[in-house]
Image (cartoon, rainbow, N blue to C red; front, side, top):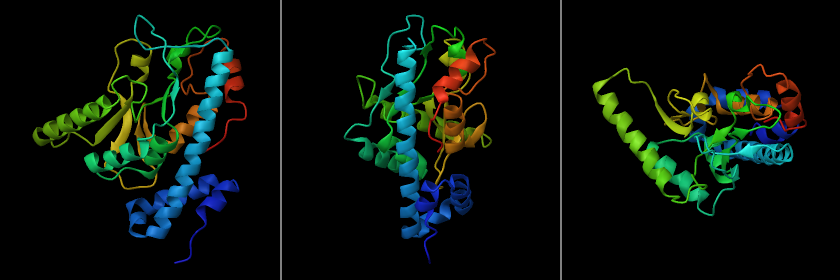
Length: 250
């Protein structure tokens, strides 16, 4: 079978068409090692572009005087971006061993982007915490007890399995990757955002305010400077426009 040359077309700017074709194949793509390998190259390129965007956002927010902090009353300072550790690839393998098939985009993010926490306070935008700042924590590397995220993920999986035995309509398992937008504001909220597992497709389903392909969610986030929700604050449009300037589309 002739390769579709997805990576070349992606790099040439035909990203939407490439993602459409990859999503249309569903989990069947894994039956062809050549196609699966090329699809992974596209996902890796997506992740490299996403990491560049994250690094630019952190730099721009820091220059604006933004304080990155925990979503608690103490507002403990945090590091907004933790690069993947040397064990990131092994952690991606562990996710697949523990939960079944993991989307290729999620594996690429784990190996190449790292953990991101943009919750904080902007000096010119008092409502920035209401903007649903980007948080994706797959490896848990910013926490002192790094292996604990595996315990957390495993406990969530075991709890879901136990619940689903008694509730056939329990729905699909969502691996928790971020607090929901209300918890990011340090108020009571709903279940965490995450990705549906198991899933053998190239791109996963991100369950947040709505359920959408992971890459679609990320593109919306970067188009709005890391804060996808509009809050109606007077300076919000100006700040988001400056943050989003020249970020790379995925």
